[in-house]
Length: 325
Image (cartoon, rainbow, N blue to C red; front, side):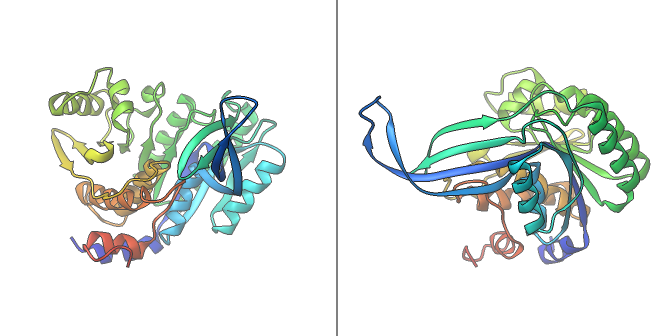
């Protein structure tokens, strides 16, 4: 496989990410004592960081790899929405597909002390988006679909992705032969019938296939069940420290993990689907795309928080050079 040609081609592609845009808020500090008011740690806050999460993190992965990233979804009104748009603009992510609605912008706040997550609290509205937002979103997709080399559906079950929206997307993309990949959520698997690829983790695959995955035979049974029931081209099951398993038609290929150290898996699934999609639309086979995505995941789990990888680091990992380059 000529990794360099594939990675060099990233800059020529434009990927659309559709889904739930999340603002990741990190409060980082250290613990030196327990509160006298209750048996809980006192966090001495050292710094606060805001990062792109959900569909925003997928788009950020794509932009960091040198491709053009475009995002379509819904934000609220107010400070958090403006902060989110600013972060997207700083990374040169096209925000023309974003619409605003009178609802909270989804914010996940994680408190981290000594590289360990202590607690997380969420501000969100999971209700389906309103009809006005839906029309604006579908109008944007219909008018701009030919601009994109591939589409990623980033479903975090925050109200954007619905069966109606998925049917609309698949109707217009199938006519154009556009690759559609989905990072799925349990409870929405029926929405994804006919997509090019879904990338569930082992727990999601187990629930989506309605069977417990406990060993290699049950893993393969679940993977082939998803292929059949969803009538999709491929299923990539991410399995953490056990690597990945790629299902296509009646074949399965297991890919061992390359991660030597794991500090935080937050956002690793976003990296996998971003890198897989980019690689495939750049000419990599299904298996080659999975191998490249596996290396990208091995890089980002070494960092705390939602992380991304760059082309140079990815090339180093793929060619077994000393990391980081």
